[in-house]
Length: 349
Image (cartoon, rainbow, N blue to C red; front, top):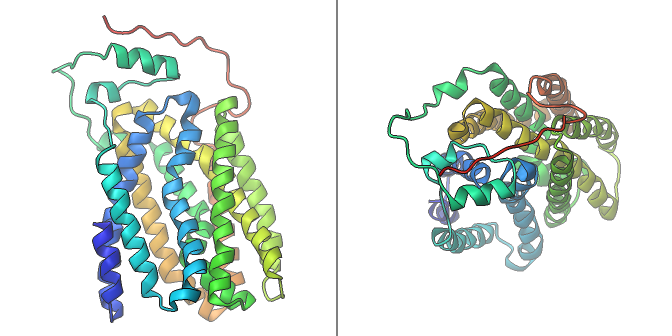
């Protein structure tokens, strides 16, 4: 479906045609977020959950990095924007074939278990639990009854306002505010995603080692807020291309520090409610993030036209940080030191 939609974008001639294709593609993307996040949880024990979600984020973030890098490399060669959709559609087609032959799933009974370590996972795989015919089918409304699941979703999606701005308008922002050429701006923007990927893995690894999610995420959010004061002050000045690569890298990196451990926190909070409803919880996150993303699509151009990119970023940073930090406190889990607990596991006979 992604391949068909992306190839079709080459043929669009009106804004309404592009809008229809983007809506269809958004449905495909929405399905992928919940189901793939659920798969990540199913195949990652808690001791490695944050790092696992760091790799999962390679999908949406890695594609942004690759798209910007590809535009920077190929636009000077092909000179037409349609070339980017041909390249993107081909990659979607080839990757879907690979996924088709390698994707795996768990049984419903196994999915309902909470696994803490790789050793437990191996033991569970060796002696899977028998199916219980009396077990009720999980329903999404069970996860929606818990306020902290909602607050965690709302908090992170608003925190990601700046991320969504860069994802939607990063190249245009650099062109408008710093007067780079289009291919230069695309090349610079890719470093935002590259360092973001690196810090997602690093912060995830640290969070897994400490088994602390909230304090690592909070540290990233506070550093992000401080750094944005400096970054926004650069608008309207002349910044060499090399320096801007560093500045955008740091911006992406700090967002990654906050986001990676949050993924593990949210997954574990949802898991504690009901392990088999993991994809439903991530579906809620996907819904909230799409609502905020739509807000960015419509609100950012209006604010920029009336004021400036600086004004919009101040709004995005202010709303994101002010809401996210207190909402992070609603998540369940330790802040500084996890109590030593002996985890016991008895395989089914």
